[in-house]
Image: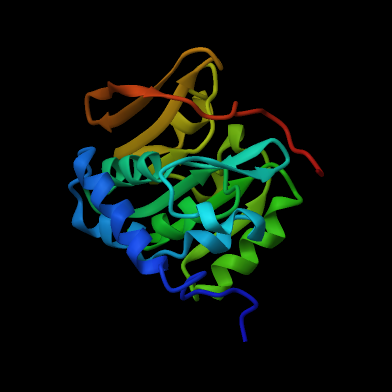
Length: 221
């Protein structure tokens, strides 16, 4: 039996999830698949129990190791941008707690996810296993380098902000593929969408965002 309460943390859980979904609609999220997933994925199992009462707020929350679980609006926005076209092979850079991973796995045929902080990996694996998500390959490694052995990817989603788009990720993007990445410094970041076409790369800049920095290398803690 799973150690995680997948149904909810109290009688009000579904109502609070419904309110969150309604708020995301108001903010412009239109993809019904993504909205359904935000409403059904148990975000409370991806954070510390002490913060469980805040699980369905539209806010980022700490997960330890100077990392955060992203704000549901940002998770939904990035997922919606990725889901505009079918994505068979998707790479996620920055597994974190596994919340974004759980949503991506349900809009992708195969999902590959890399986490640079070793201590976060076992817990994420436990949570994703509890949800019976079987199309995920997760490993500890340097996301800056991507995952060349599994490339090319139809979609790449980065959950931390590099100062510039890593060249390795662009190289691993298939023709017809899409890279979604927050780019910038701690003071100023923008969400970029980069599509690889037959003619080359096409870049679109979306709204300002605030992510933890994408750091090269790996960490034990």
